[in-house]
Length: 167
View 1 (tube, rainbow, N blue to C red):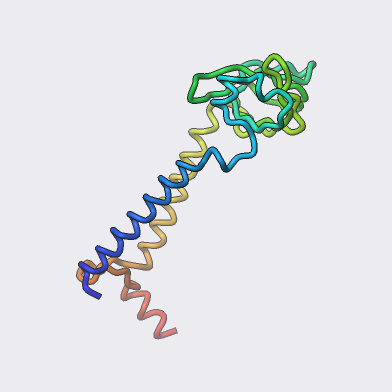
View 2 (tube, rainbow, N blue to C red):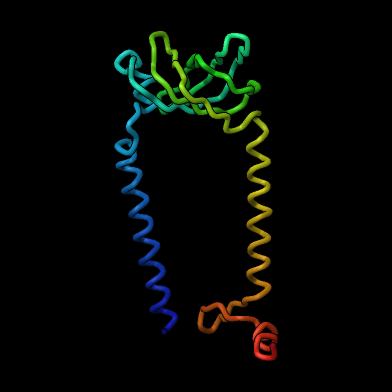
């Protein structure tokens, strides 16, 4: 296949992928059965009694009262919610998700709480481990394969081919 035809095909596929991303973003609010955080920030009282799934950063944790105060970020600005039924141990700065029923006074009666990051510094660790893993995968791939610039393809390295034929 001619390299120019291959390049046009790659550009076309990337264009389709970009279009799908734009489409997904345009219809994203219809994917969730729960109120959006922007709706809760602007008109909380209209959603009292509904089930919701919120993500937030722990501001205060009161283990003896089984509750925590979380900061929820939205496009309309951040707001605080009190989560009752909070049985997980987490420090301020940790990131959690809470599922439950919205109540008066920006309160949620949680039926489930999951700690995503127990402390604020966990995100950097996750990114570092992911980067190291990606580098190891790339190193392993290019140890066994090489790029043929003339045909814009990957080929098995010659030494790998020889070992495979002899074995």
